[in-house]
Length: 415
Image (cartoon, rainbow, N blue to C red; front, side, top):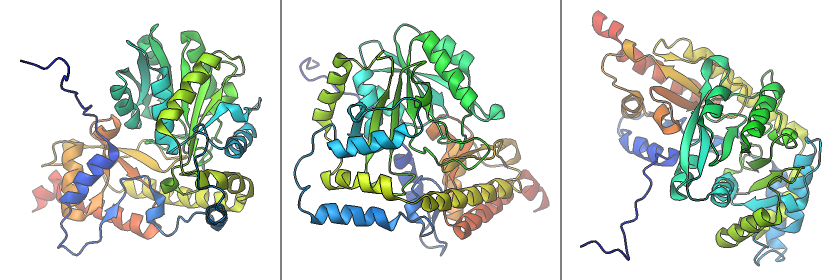
């Protein structure tokens, strides 16, 4: 007889990027002499050409060695850290956000979980982009929030299908998530498109969760525009971190910020929920937080330009080299972030059944790791990270081309 007191707790089965990359790495042959090249994770620190600013390290070392930051910080974050983040974000906004609107989190992942946790209620649903970042669906599953996906349109620069958003939303929709610059697509939305998203959110009376973890990593025609610019149209919860722009993902310093000049959601009750949730999960290390004001205020613009120039170079190389691989079609030249999507032409491959099969066979035969599109919600596509050493990237693409040629129908006809 089933024990009603201790029912079986079902773990959400959503795919995670780290989980699938772990499985792909296990597939690699260790005895073929080929160096493993991973274009699966968005962690540029693996490659020596992407180095964080020395000033950031000095700031952390000084706060650590000062012995002043060994204790607990307030669970919402140190006051000086919240103020520095508020000042940093306000520089791009028509109306300033205050330090009280900022909550310091352990990376953007904790900011995602905090947002979903405080918005959740029985019967709630959330609108997520497809393709997108799988942690949203995983967090939603743990919170019993129903996920409804709207498509991003590759032929329109991965724009949000706003008609789909309108048809999916109902009175129980708590928010729609927008990732800009885009992961996994490498898109950067125009001012006009972001305004259309805000107008749609207003019409549907939903909050916009603006995932801007790749904020300012834009190197194409569209400049980066923060969603908070449109906070007076619809309330915006902005998520971000030091991870990508400062190249320190392992420091786990992120933020959740309320951009809501009309105080639609920024009420004592909502703020109380966020604070209580922060009490449960805590935040990043106190000495890292204490270094944030100096890191944000004193990092020179030349550092950011160097990173963006390198990403533009590697993304351009990726896009051009993929044109030489008939089995992969990249419909959109990346303009930001660190990743891009390519569509598999399975009809040209004789013994590849789908994107998972493609990625596992590629890992086994060529020691190259790329992510199957199903992990980000798009079957029979693949995601590549171009935040890599140019020489490693070139070698990886050469191996992918060789792999595709070996598995193509044309090759079997000639052999």
